[in-house]
Image 1 (cartoon, helix red, strand yellow):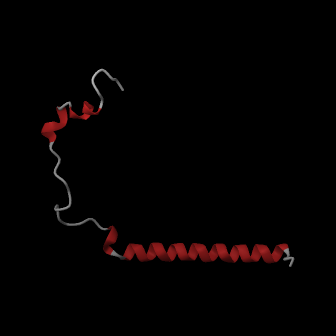
Image 2: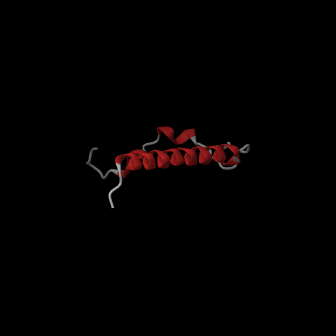
Length: 68
């Protein structure tokens, strides 16, 4: 079965237009939902402890005498 170049190009353009329409539909649907909005509370945010920022525990992964 041999298809002409015009048929192949027409089908490829139609499929590309459908894919772009599907992606725009998905983005439009995602913008309307509340899944991408920030939460109003602070329950999910971990508290950062700045007192331990100067400790040497970050370099504790290396054995004695080894350097990075």
